[in-house]
Image (tube, rainbow, N blue to C red; front, side, top):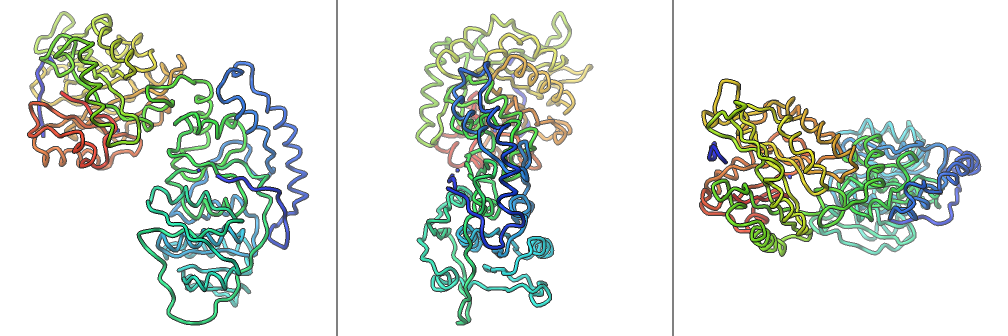
Length: 581
């Protein structure tokens, strides 16, 4: 797949009045409320939004969120609850000081959803024991001081109920068994896609008795006919005093169910970054320095989550298609090239206005295959590798910003996005990027680095496929992230081209932690479909999940050129950015 181009050329229910009864809670409701009332005064003070944010679209949400009274036992700032092995243990520790009852599921989505459905109704923590973490699950049952444990498709062979004075009840997996367990009638609700597991669990309501069932598998009923014992159903905990909880499709079923069993208000996001759109920002507005729980490590750290909330509230400029994130929320289809003409790609084959019309029509061909907006874009080559050293001796022609303006203005004025592409020759990526600082201060202009044309001090373009070290990439990303932050810009695309492993040296050391940037890996190899797929799969091996994948279609060097439908339906995962050359 090696190639050389011309040298000139990648969720919500709120519990009602909280009542604490029986022996389910280790500390009294009164103690929790007394502790929380001290925080209530602070929350009330913070409920008035700052004067600088008085015109924020999140003002009402901000005021409502910070006025929430939260028990002192919860962390005072945003906290991410990890969920190793999707066990639900960390969530159980966060929400439950103790519990008379626990529900434990075995392996299989059907068992997990059945356990979650029962746990929410019973107001009991839900743990997941697929057979690899029995010791940790047993330790959590001991910590909770549970007197009754319900096993749903689980075994826990090392749990000695006699020694621990704990009753074990085994669910038999049948509809009749569920009725005997709970003395309640459940209504079945199918879950049709894996991506909906956490969302469906987050929507469970203790008062609605819903049994979630995955459409692709079912619980295996037990063979014995023994009568199922009753599992205690307790009343609501003091969930109204829990922080707001956020979840996403990656959140674990047991963790989500445990939060709902406690009575926490779970707000579901399609992507674990509140800047996704205005609705997700409203979920967390005002909570950057206040109690907020996030279910799953996909949210990063509490500090990073707080930073994203702050940025989302401060920077309300939306990108084409809406929201403050480059991806997800939209996909892009781009023409690649240079304003000088057709030699460097499809974009320059026609004047700027005609190029906009062409790429807009191309993006529209993709739209029927995606529910997200498909945005037209240009990838504009700003510095062009050259076979001649030039006056500065760096084998790269750096074009002035004004030479690029016609095409950048045309696409951005049409509601699209522009990406400036650098082919540095012997130059440094950072020094070239700084030449285009004024253009990069625009909210809808991103940056691409092409290591193919990054050569050594004694080399010339086309002698070999170039490469760049992670350290140099990190210098540029740090500078660009700082530029975005200092100028209060929405997130910016940061694209790295690659079609050979050696092009990005020490790729695992590339720092993708900047919330100001959307990191995109652009697989721009050409050839037959089999070759392109092989390159695509090779580049994805060991790739940080922080990268969004991009794909390039060649008009003259692919045989055949993929159609829009093939590009979106046959490439896995579906590319977020597709360019044409």
